[in-house]
Each structure stands twice: as C-alpha cells, then as structure tokens.
Length: 472
Image (cartoon, rainbow, N blue to C red; front, top):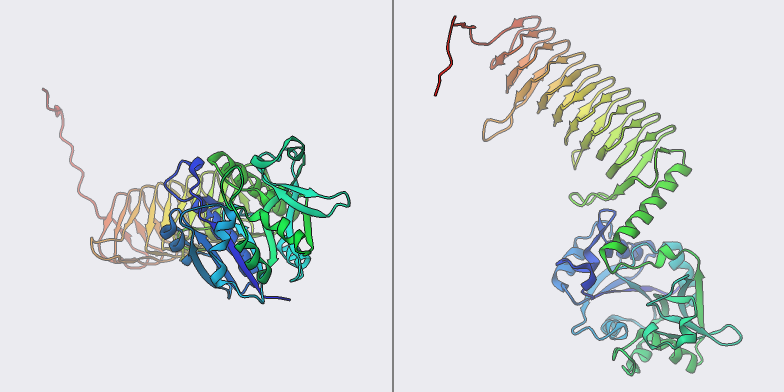
C-alpha cells in the first residue's frame, strides 16, 4: 500500500455563513468542521495532512495546530492559497510538499462526515495507479459537478454546473469533491490546468479529462449515503447537517438498546474546553428523555434514567441512578460521579469534582462543587456544598452553605457521618462537624464541633412590642 498524503481545501471565506469565523471553523457536534476532516488522516494512518488555507489563515492554522482528536502520527503542514483562484489552484499549492511515491487524497474542510471506510475503499480503487473519484447520486444535483460517462459507462470527465448544458445538468451522478490520485500523476496534471471556463478559475476536476487523454484509468467509487459528502455553506445547511449527524448517533445508541424518548431531540457533543471527544457509553435499559445534551465522556450505568432537558458533561452515573429534569452536571477535567441509586434534581447542579456515593439525594436548586458525599447523604433543597467532605447519612438542611472562600484561598469543610445540619446554616471553612452532631437552624459555625454535640450559633431573638415602621 502506497503512503497517503491528505490534502484538505480550507481556504474559502464562506460568505453565506455571514460570520467573522472562517467557515471551516464553524462547529458541528461541538467541534470545528475542519477537525472532523483532519480526523480522517488519523483513521487512514496517513503520512501527512496538508491543509490549504486562505481566508482567516492564521486563525485556521492555529485551530488546527491545537485540534482535539488529531493525534495521529501524520505530519501536519499548511500552505497558503492567496488569492483563491479555484480548486485546482488550491491543490497546486501543495505540490512542493508532495512526494511521488504516495497517493494524494483530496478532501474539503467543510465536508465533515465522510466515513473512514468510504475513504479506504476509494484509496483501494485508486490502487496507486488510477484516478479514483467519490461519487453519489442526488435527486437535486444543482451546484455540483456532473460525472460524464461514455456509452460503455467509463468515466470521461466532470463538467461543473455553471459550464454544463441542459443535457449535462440532467445528470444526477455528481462528483463529491473527494478523490484519490497518484501524486506523481497529479503533479503533471496540475501544471497543465487552465482557467478557460465560465468562472475563470482553475478547476481540479479538469484533471479527469487529462487522465483519460493520457490513458490513465478513471474509476468512480459510488456511494448512496449523501450525508457523507454533504458540505456546509450556510447556517441552515450547518443546522441540517447537525441534526442529520445527531440522528445518526441517536439511531446507533438505540440499536444498542438505549431508550430515547425522541431521537430527533438528542445531542452528543465534544467538549471544546477540555478537548475531550464526545462519547456516550450506556448499560442496559438506559432511558433518556427529550432535549438532553451530553458533552465529552459520559457513562450511564444499567437502568439509569435521564429526565428531560438535562445537560451532562464528563460524568459517570452508576446503575439505577435517576437524574430528574433540568439537572446540569459538568465534570470538566476533574470529572463528576454519581453513585448507584442516587436521586439528582430536578434543577440541581453538579460541578467539577462532585463525587456522590450510593443512594445520595441532591434536590431542587442544590449545587455541589469539588465535594464528596458518602452513601446515603442528602441535600434536598436550596443548598450549596463547595470543597466539602460529607459523611454517610448526613442530612444537609435547606438554605445551608459551606463558606469555602476567604477572598484569597479555598478551604475545606468536613461533615462527619450522621450529622444533621439545620436550615439556613453557614459553615465557615476550615471547619469539622463531628460525627452524629447537630447544627441548629440559622447557625453560623466558625469552630469545629465535638461528635454528638448540638451546636447553635445565632443572635438572641429580640422582639419590640408595638413597634412602628418609619414613614415618609
């Protein structure tokens, strides 16, 4: 097998996107379009990937250099196309980096969903000797180059839509913009390109007629899945492709046994902050309600139930846990874990470092950050636990908080097993509440307490009879 060099056209402005962001950096499933395309270089074990930039070149190149998921062993290079004079002119910029012993695979930076198996088949069709084109039949081929065949069915050329006559525009087999071609042949054909066409551009597709004229076989690898060659030119097309991609992901999960209330209202995204690839691993009998968004690495154990409108990122949720609607779990790099049989939400928030044990209850408007809660601990209403270690069977009252930040440093609160914290308490860290202790409602605790003690720290109640409020 000949070495592969991936050539990615990413120089276009994307005027119809109406965005300051270059088109290839628009996001699909949480990641730039171009990152999806770069993944193929890793999947194909390519020798190199050469990205052709132009509009927003500095921004595009910087985004590629730090691309999540492009961790293959290929050599990543950039070339500039300035000005942009067509697809042939774009690929011409890569010639100084092409080696004659390889096969060049031409991809587009705004076509993100081509499958690796499809590209492997295309490379195999080229065989290091032939020009192989990826084609698909579309019910509406407007805007695409048409595949021209002779009476025997052999490919003879490609005509661009704007240069095609009525008979040629009636052809529904189109060139996808993806090809595999021996680099030694590509180099010579590129040197012969002209811009004698309606657009005054150098078309890469003109090399097909050159190959036929030179006696080099031209083969078409035809696929039926148009989604794999769908490009993005507008916000509408981006949204359509997002939904198509997410529906494909949802169907794959349902084939594994996951119950989705509505596969059209499901999202799995990469985590752009941490670079973690989106992946949802599910045990048996997992149920997911509508409009849930999963980001980064998420694992749902057997029998987990996710309520409607939840956002869950970088988290492990153990078997039998119930995540009620409108819950937000964001583990970021530290991760978040929910133990077996836990009940979370609705309207709860688990932040990075939240580690919850078995049968833990986190209720309405409770926030947990960088805290561990042992088996059976409960915080059911309107509470905050930050930088805390909470023991087994603790009951944490409504309106209570850990005051963990002194303005410069974070401090830890330890609440030992079987403690009962009343409503509207403030635990000023660093502080330890001894095992079995009770904190009376409304207390501000600034000193550690002994095990089993009742601790009350609040001002004495004063009532003034017949008091009148100030009047204007």
